[in-house]
Amino acid sequence: MALSKTPQIVSPKTIELIIYITYKLKGRPNYGSVLLGKSLCLIDSMSYLKTGVAITDFTYIKQDKGPTPNPAKFLPIRDELVTTGELQKIDVPFYGRTQKKYIATRPPKTEVFTSEEIFLIDEIIESIGNMNATDISELTHQFISWIVANDKEELPFYTFLLTQSDPSKADYEWANKVVKKYLSTQKAS
Image (cartoon, rainbow, N blue to C red):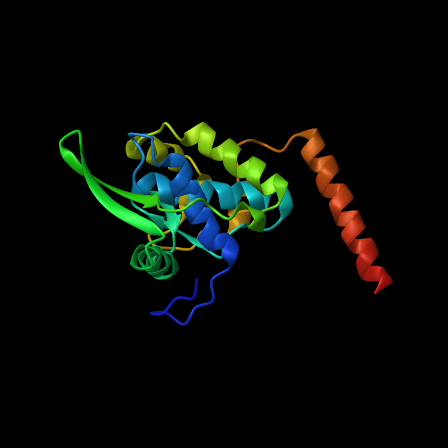
């Protein structure tokens, strides 16, 4: 998909992850736009923690209801997917409110993902797929990076490693090993 209204370059993985999530969650009554944004955040964060890279091109910022994809990049992409007919936006009544849903109109092109990425994506969607907007927002309010950030501040992926727990002996051993490996590569160059 080439974005007609914005000059940004968008990776196929970014597009297909949006399609994938909206395709997988479309039948869930609690699914709405909040769950889409939180799913993207959790998938990218877990991918970063496991592999050192996120799946999408998004950065995430602190908002009142928790971390979200940066609207400056996410909203034009989402809206373009609606314009091209790859997503359908529907408003449905949900407990006295209007819930916005984005539904994929086609299956995702899964060949853009590795099998490990598919496993991770499915695992996260399954673990949070039955949550409503309030539940998923409360879950993301527990991230230390979100707690300490200023409103609209970017939440770098490495901040999702922050914890309130004291480092264990194994943590110190791991850190020493990584530092020694790093120092040995610096001496060699």
